[in-house]
Image (cartoon, rainbow, N blue to C red; front, top):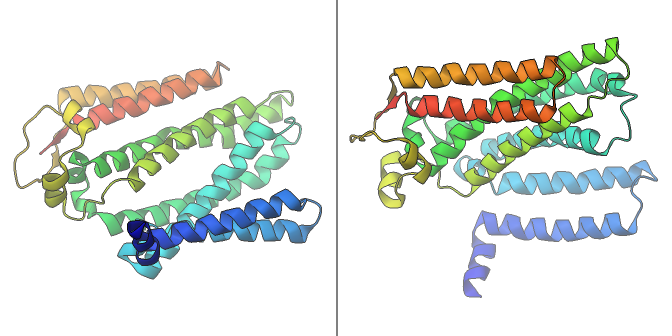
Length: 295
């Protein structure tokens, strides 16, 4: 009991958890009692609750603990942009009744998504620089945090692919064929976005590599890294890229899988096939990097 009390009263994570708990209870009671879609004021209050929860998450983040105000603002803006982009995408793809107004939806959603992607890129770059020195980014791959961060960045490749498909190709397709239903393709993009959420969740459970050597010495190397990397590691850790034949073949294979995903799109195959090709693209790119880095 004393430990729980100390965590809640002393640590920012504990304080943010307490705040999140009480706001969540109040938010749940509010939406359970009041029909929030009947009046705009109810919707505004609900959005206020959501923003409070978002700010609590930014308050408890690694970046806020490292650089209080800039880290808090950057993380909050980063998560806000993700919430707007992904939240709209999930609701429309899974809960829309039909696709009759899809062109009108894309007309305003595409620039919103591009703006969110720009904010995510800028704030994401800043957040990474708070945790690790970008020049030592490959060095962090020996740690669980570095592996999670690398996988998260690789997942961005199919996300950008599906964004182009849903924002450009589908728009042209609907203009030519109004009966075309794009929701399955948007669902495929939403599955890819859930993957990056999983990688982000893993990051939140790992120790940031401020001192890679010290973290590796105390916590050990990543089990995933130890499984796929068979070469010896020399100290001090100073990783560099040396593109081997095997690594180059994996990179070429990843491009092939991305091309297959595009062919599956153009030929109107199942979105599940394009999603599967995207997963194989990520795996191939990862193996290409692991077979090209030298420590």
